[in-house]
Image 1 (cartoon, helix red, strand yellow):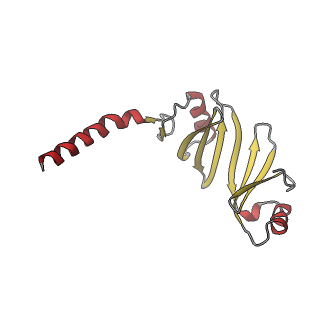
Image 2: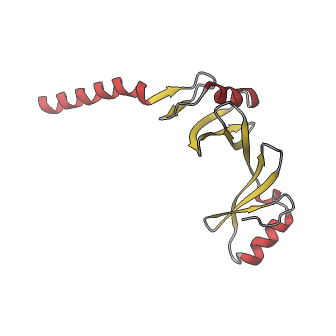
Image 3: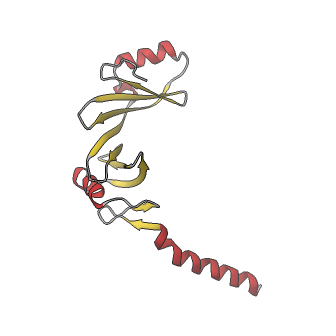
Length: 149
């Protein structure tokens, strides 16, 4: 019994001491970033563009940083470089908001399958594309609904 209590106490003490090192607090939004050191300029970009954003989660993406968040009830993700430049914004949209040619393409080329999720993607130059998740794959379309990938 003593051995069990001692092991439990040691485990609790270890977690208490190590937890702060494992989670770095994001001073700008009050969210925890797990295992990544997000540059201040990158965090500042999110705080400036989306004040009051909820549930910001950070990930590394090809040398940049991806911030997943909810703002004004919309789910979005941003790819931002270390200097705070937004490289891409992906906003979840209703499937019905996709251009009609996207829906027609899916109906014709993926018969019997439905679009599970849809998103509008805007790159740093303002170029807009659409993403439709069908059968576990992400299909990409240009602004007019022509398939790209």
